Image (cartoon, rainbow over all chains, first blue to last red; front, side, top):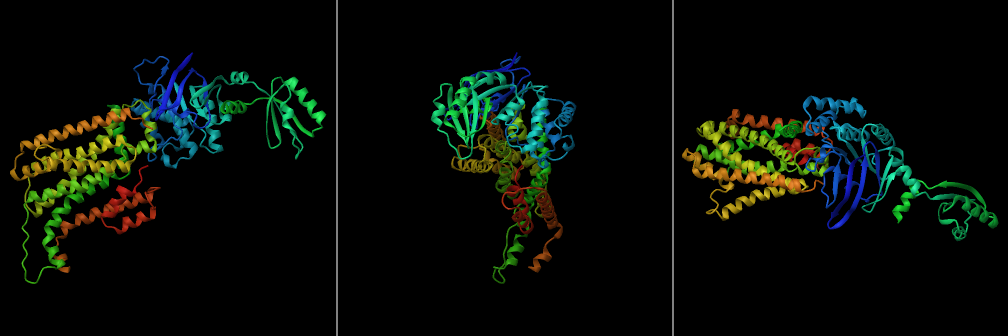
Length: 302
Length: 258
Length: 67
């Protein structure tokens, strides 16, 4: 069942289309990664969904929401660079936003304590936010987004700005949150998408270029690949490889050759045959399938 | 109403923590007492600085009490307005510039509530500070120059307070138009100055312009009764302030909070 | 000058001095606690300490960076 449906959503800046009529839907309980390179339009899309900016056309519909009601009741949003009133304590800030979401005083205080414990910063709840580390701020940011029990939690690049430790903390928190709520997060880091999400929206130049489950997308774009490397200093004639019938194309970097092929079995035989007849000093030969990164590069370079 | 009080209380808390509730009233008190004191000591100051030839007698007529109070008001219309403009220039624009507004406005808070609560918070601070300053001025005037009734003082506070609310409304409006606090402060002051200039040029047409309010307050203090024009001016000032506030809410709602 | 000092009623002027003292102390406390000011932080210390009356006010209005 889909929680959120977006139809033909558009956004222009200075007459230039930034989001070019995108369609997608998000199922209840799923964890979706909005993946794309910088400038693809991820943040703009999330900001339109959050009600911070207006679209130039299209429809956003939420399950069980009447047309008139305020979408902000249903979504929680963590911006890419959350900025707080840093003179407030973590708890004060959470109670403040809870009250803005129309919770009464007791409920707000209770919910704030609950969330501070939930995201693991209960110890620092009475400290001023300007004393918080980057990872703590990000966790406070997630807590403020969840304060009014939104049906959909949207996180914009939740881990990009963090150091490795903060990144790990927030990723494992997201892993836990998956079980409780529907999660949509944007990222340009493939590992993060692969690690946490089970569905994928791949965005490029203001369009959704691919959507579906992680496994489904992989299957669909399944490109078989053979990695080969040779002794140092040796350079094979690449044309001879690409001339083989089962080979689509080849790339190389630092002596590693990635050969994209149609049929793994046929290609393996052909390539080994070529190497043997040419007498190339083979060092490594690996048959594998394309990673998400290959898919990403393929889509982006189109 | 709950959301209004939430934003309002947070503003109050912030003004407390960054000492606004201490320094703004103190500055208004300073502005209030500087003129009664310096006017009183003016003859001695001139004498001590010298400059007068030996034996020349020098008589400065002691101004009537209400004229001295008017001098204090003149302080508020210059430095007071400057302080208001500078202290409120980041009220909304600063939050938008820093990005705090992003976290606040994704919560289901009404834009009208947000703007009006912020307007109210500044207004309370300014009106209380102005009252403190006026009381201080009144105290000195009563000791040094002569009596002004408490009722006259309260009317002065009420009518001149409307002018200060007008300045705050301009600032809030500019806050919703622009994201750069410095620009907001500059335009607020420019707008206030333009109000005076336009009023001076079209003086005979704009009988009830907000900029004329202190002139009518002077009449009130010297005649001892509230002139009809003062009520008219008060109404116009309230009306324009309300329009500015409505315009601020409207621009805030239509503008994208990027 | 001495003559002027004698004629001044100190009861009248004392409040001015008290206000100035409060402003200066409060500005100093805030200066210690705040992380960033507009412009070099040390400069504001001198402004608060050396410019009577105006210094602390300038600090609050211009020097203090809103967080």
